Length: 112
Length: 119
Image (cartoon, rainbow over all chains, first blue to last red; front, top):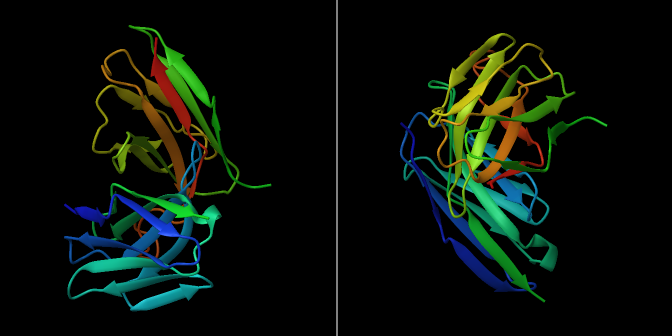
């Protein structure tokens, strides 16, 4: 089955700097890669996703890149703000086996 | 205002007791899911349901049970057989069920979670 590894587990940046979180996956059949943001005591919220037919997707300060050959994808947050502080999860999903696997999460802290 | 509602927000279980966590959605989604979240770990799938009156075990179904009598509702029971129930439980739903349009499991909506503790 699919295995998703996420790094780093914690990340601290200064306000205005960029933050990058990386994930690798094992199942070459995976074709959908969402990213979720989870604030303390709340459920995860989908912030951006990418499908295997594209290599990059941007939404304002957030971007996701996908390298299918290397089986890794990354979340990029530019011009970070204190409200970006949260736990971020990546996931990988394949419609062939109807399975979605989550990374262990990255706790991002943005210092004002 | 559409979404997924989980209740209660906090729940305490006594030893030997069964407790039920509620999950309701008004998004008209076919598929619903239950995940368990432990500190420092990713979400692990307990059960999922692709359609009313049907559900499948996930990776850690032992000690849990579910029902799907209505499209809107997918309650999770934590039975006394679950020896380590303390965790944060998340319900989710997706617009496309498995096999439809080849989309697979695109989870877009999570509930706010229920934190279960043992007394």
